Length: 253
Image 1: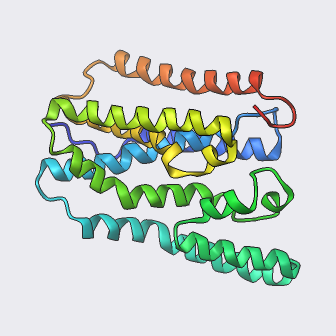
Image 2: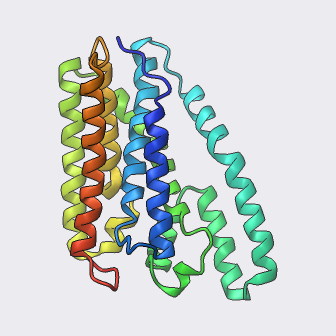
């Protein structure tokens, strides 16, 4: 069974995701679909978390305590520092109403529900949203919700025969995808902010991890590996191009 540990190309994907989002918010180069970086980041998270769980299930040593301890150590130190620092600055710089919303945002982050707060209180591009320095934490809350539920989903999938596990995940991904498409016709914000309509992106990453673990050996040819990597990068660029073509200047698709 293939042992998948550190993968340097994932750091490159992370960098591409962050750059796309930054350029989008700075309105540089007309990057109208910079939020595509969030989509890529969700796929990366799905891959890494599913890889962590799958490795341990294959070795019969998966532990919920280890899983949640590692997630807590990775997320919360930096999150606490950023939240406290933002509150400190906001206390001196914000008007009372804005600071009240900032405090509510910090509470929602710690409860893993800031995405739900922003859905009810702000769309992504209105004044309240653009003035919120912690708006980006909506995606972190989606990830945190994923961390809560995903080990249980993988354990459920593991009850199936190995050749059927991918099919079960694929079916779950399809359900999430079509739910997103349906919800999007009713409310783009609802589809944008919520875990059930984002789960299919995380499941794509999970399917990639499952595929790698189903192979006894990694891709043996450097040419094949590099070709696949270039093809993946072209798909991301193609998606950005489509977003640019089909998005009007107001930011609405």
